[in-house]
Length: 201
Image 1 (cartoon, one colour):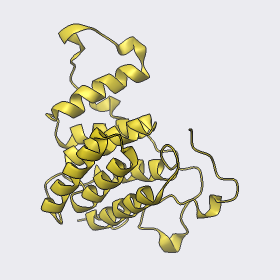
Image 2 (image 1 turned 180 degrees about the vertical axis):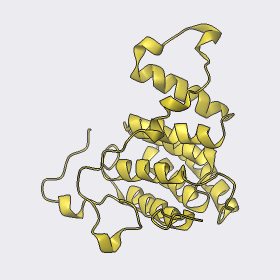
Image 3 (image 1 turned 60 degrees about the vertical axis):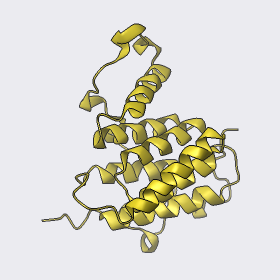
Image 4 (image 1 turned 135 degrees about the vertical axis):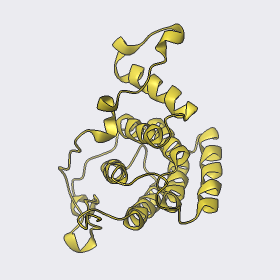
């Protein structure tokens, strides 16, 4: 029996769609500080659902968004790439390649922890995703220079206890009023417009 206190895949899809709209509308440098914790929370909630159990609402649209996100990343348009990857995830929330693309865009926008969580989730869904494996190893080395190795020995299997997406989420900060919530915390900066935190340039 489903835990009714947890969001459904449809509700998570709505949150991902809202985040895509927010990223699309954002003209500032870096990643909107409200997007990162909301996205990290969505990843945590996605791990409560078995990948492949529920069909994607629109797999063709998800593939199209993946192509456009890849193109945007290749041309240095990280905000656009993230918005398109999130829009694709709203159509197919457990698509590992879209999580990888969103993570890549987050990294380019300076949100390393969010990037780690997204890329880790891509590997949770598909442990054989080659780009995600390569980039997660590189991100681990970026975060912890002691993990840097040379040669073929740098390839290692993921340890589930090291999964950053399973780390506790810091939920301090402004939140959406209860009437606008989708059963889990969706961060909003409406209450933070006067004196909100600034993004890194």
